Length: 278
Image (cartoon, rainbow, N blue to C red; front, side, top):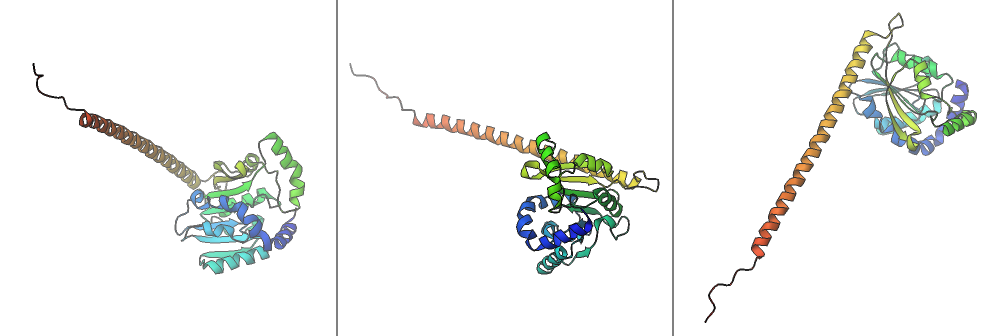
């Protein structure tokens, strides 16, 4: 599967891409903003931006750069940008295995339904890491080979056929991330009962000696602490909410009991007075 074949296939596919793939990818793209945790003014790179389906899920105030190898896919993305009036989106025809950007150019990178379409996914990951700032989020939305023995076998068997329609179905998540020097920080299912996943990594960054940079280590530590804090806050909020519900229920039950007692006293017949005549 060469770059030219991918370009040719997606040029042909571009006219019906949104109609076919738009509905399939919609739920997955909705997690983009939350998982990338983008802040106003940050720079986001999307590799394999295609027709720009993801743009509606990117918050305002973000500088978005999108690249794709297919000129016709990009033309549809440009139409979407013009129609929506996005003024902070820049599109370029570019091979993701040879990104024309300086090191550490972007705060985060999005690779939505992309990594299984490139001839050399490890080279693409290498380039993504290079242009992403140390400690920045790298988010993959993709199908990966199933861990279920039967489904995994089918993924492998049908992969040559999938090649013909522009992607491969036999990429193993853990093997790919390990070989690419990325540690998976978060995984969640996004479609087809977990068959498609959102996979978030923190760019380790590298020094000249090839070791993870200190900046990245500090950023990873900060992000992990933030994640722990958020988890603690959510747990505390849930506990408080549960406690409040219990207190409200107890109060309601007590009030109901008091109402019943009051009702009994009100409805109790009065005793007849006076003595019987002799």
